[in-house]
Length: 350
Image 1 (spheres, rainbow, N blue to C red):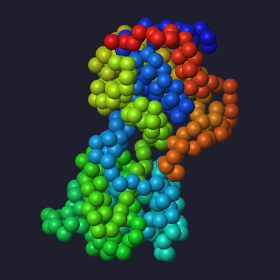
Image 2: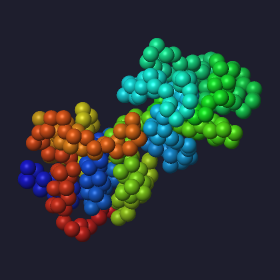
Image 3: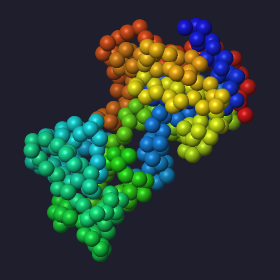
């Protein structure tokens, strides 16, 4: 292990344009960002493209958001915007089977906006009223819904709009649930415009359900450590955020990087090595990864070792006890060991 750590540190120290890709827990993310700062690397998530779209809604436009706990206790009207992944359907079923205890109603009202939601089970035999706009996609449906709520004419009216309008008029805490990767940035921006319109006379909020809980946790960790989300670089000695320049997948494809550190305790594996890029891999594996100069076998966060992870059900970080503790090291411990072998005050890459 010591020899592998020294070799990885030597490769990293010799690099002129290192890039990091990770999919790990909060401790692993913090260790990776600290190492990136030491060597002047840029970093991204393994699902960087999807996370960048979700992050852009907050960094570019902002919005009105609410915590999951508030939705459970207060929401009397829930509009599900687009398709929800399987990972979040249990939460929706839980909402359908309970009633808000801070508002005196007997049941929540559910709506599905757009063509998504096929096969969505609400629980207790509940069905959601679909709001669709002919053959229009999700963005077009949200735009038509916003226009009709504002009293404007549309070429194709939204189905069941009168029912939605009546429910919205009596609702005390309406919430729009959206999955960041179910729509493009313009559709999500239109959704926030609809919320802004509603809030001029009453109230409405949105609940963001991230595509990757681990990825969103890493986004939050990066933000509190550097002031910026993922796709940040320390190449010039200070953190710079640019979702295009520091898209690690793009940097590798363009031949800009000469060293790639891949960190993932899941099933994802790095893409094939290209050119002279040196690759060091930290993965949950029992075999060396093809094309890697060094492969470190690490444990899975929350399974092989205790971890801190982001939970979409609580909207915050949770401490997770290992399900089947093993002797496999964590990503954070390997990264800290590599950092210890990087000379202090090492010259930054160009």
